[in-house]
Structure formats: structure tokens, C-alpha cells
Length: 463
Image (cartoon, rainbow, N blue to C red; front, side, top):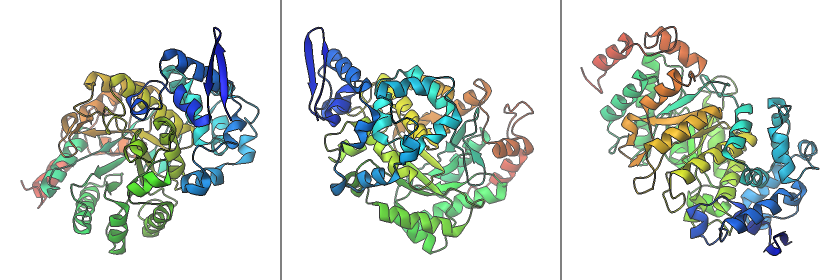
């Protein structure tokens, strides 16, 4: 089916739904690289006007990637709940935007339509929304998850303490993790991206992190972000695996590029649940996504990168995850060229994930060859706090020395806590006060004795 609109006697035609969605996307380098972007602001405006008038029902009648060829498309069809969709089925994309922004549309109404929305619908409505619009809606949508603590409550911000090390040195990992804990970072997860992916190193890393957590009685969870197959092998050896991690994308082919499919993810999910390390009914999966992942593996099928990103959320929500985050600027300027594009993408991803019922976090980050800097990251972090983001990622000095990209620092978490008044998960907040790291107002006081004694007593770190 083709679509068209007229602006000042000029007719703009769009051959199909995937073309319309791509042309309506705010400018970004990835769509330009793929040859999908609008030729300029006028064509983009025409596409957005056309998209705004499109009935939501149209998304149920036209597949972007044929289900017969793609298991993610089949999953999206399976997930769709007609009863939930009935609440909004008469709306156009533009009317959905207006409904989302209405003061009467609260958490309860947003929850009710979660499984009636498809990734393509939420991607579409984001394309005709300003940052302010998406922040307003996201702030209304809570998605609360639990493992050993409670993440995603309104007005709170959790953090992933990311103690990466270029050689996976045990002393270096523990020293970095303690550095983050001293600044109150780590209630979402203490999670290491391993430099290698051997099962032996994976088990060593999760064992290190588990020892640290147990000795300090930290109400959090740990994770080694190795490949899911490595995690399965480690769990078979009864390693102390809290969260099972995997990067995912929005098409079957793109996921094969990551070495996974839905069957493998289900196997990992069941293996993690069988360990029963968290609270009863705890969520145990941790997924990462990022705009450009499908394009970089030539697995986008002519679909714009932001819509492909939203399709990845269908994969994530199938497994009731504890954490999902978009590594928004990590893939590089080929996909998000500058700070403005990164900021827009971070707010889009968070908005789309929340509408689809995901506990969304954002790795507020950029690569060193992107046209971005830490002031752009300050802006995105502040906007995400206003949008009620579940968690962000922090590293020492905002410089990840293993992955070689710029993220947030632990000091940025302090800014969120003390200036923006975003305390951590309640259990972690209580722990920080009990060990003497924070005062009654939640402000940092200094190094608590418990952490100092652990450093002195640890065989890994030494005195």
C-alpha cells in the first residue's frame, strides 16, 4: 500500500509503510548511510504528516519484515493482544500521541494498552513527538522489577556499577567496583563486560562479584556480561550467576549475528530461573540493545534503525527482564553522528521501551570519534531523570578503559542523587545509610569502615 500527502501543491508519495516510517524519522546518520532517510526537512515533514493520519490498524495489516522469514516478526504477532488494542484501536498515530499526553492517561491506562501496542506503533508515534512529549509520557510509566531489591519506582534512579578491566584482572575489577560503591553506585547491578569470553574467566568474575556482594551484604545483584552460551555453561557448573545477559536486536538475522535465537534465549532463561538466587518470582534476564545494531550486520531489511530498535524490545519483553538498556551512542557516529542525535535517540529508546512495558535504562555514552562531549551527556542524563528512567551506567571517571568509550562517571550518579533528588532503590538506600556512607538526607559522608575493612582483608586486593 502506498501513502501520500500534499504540501503547497507538491505531492509526496511513499511506496509502503517501511518507507513512510523511515522518511518520517528525525535526522540521523544511520538512516542516511542506509539510503533510507528523507531527502530534506520538507519531505520529512510530509512523511510525519502522513504518518500522523495513519490509523493504528494499518500496522496490523502490513508487515515490515515478513513473518514467514523472521521469527521476531512472528513473535510480535504472537504478543499482540487484541483486547488491549481495542482500547486504542480507533485512533490514528497522531491521535495516539494526543491520548498519551492527556493528563487523564495515567499509569493505569498505559499499563492496560501495553500488549496491544506493537513495536512499530510506538516507533511511529515517537517520530511525531518532541523530546518534551516523550519525557512527559515516559515519566508517567513505571515499570518495576525485582531481584534482591526493587528497581524502577517513581522518583528513584538506579545505577549499574561497571568495573570493567582491559585484562579482566581480579584486583582491578574489585578495586573499580569498590570505587563505585564508595560513591553509591551499583543498586541496579554490579556488572562486568569481560575482555574474554571463556567459561573459566566468566566463572572467576561472577565468583569475585558474588564474594564482594556477600561479604558486604549488599542488596544488589551481579552479572558478567559474557555471551549467553557461556552463561549456560557456567550455570551448568553451578557458578553463582545472578543475571543472564545478552545483546539482542530487531530481526532474526541480526540476532543470529549475535549468535542467538529465541530458542537459545528461552534455554538461558529457564537455566537462570532454576538457580533461584533472587527473591521469589525474580526477573533474571539483562538485555542490551542499540540503534544501528541491525544495520551494522546488514540485517535491517530496509527498515529505519529506530524502528528496528523498537522491534528488539519485543524480544526483550518476551523474557520478563530485570534490566534492559540501550547503549545509545556506543555503536558510533556512523549511526548517531553527534550529541543532538544521541540525545534524541536516548529519549526515543527509553520512551518506546517503557510503552512496551520494559524496565528501561540507558547507557548515556558516546565514542571518541563522535561529534559529542560530556556536556551532551549531562543534558541527556538530566532529561532521562525527568523521564523517570530506571537506571543508568557509571564507570570511574566516565572513561571505560576496556571498551574504550565515554560513559557517565560515578560522580554523575551523585549529581542525580543530591541535586535532582533521585535516590537509589530503597533497599540499597537503607544499606548505604546503615554502613555509614550516607547521612539521613542521603548525602555522601565518606568511606565507611565496612568497605575499608574489606579492602584490607581481601586476598584479591591486599592491604
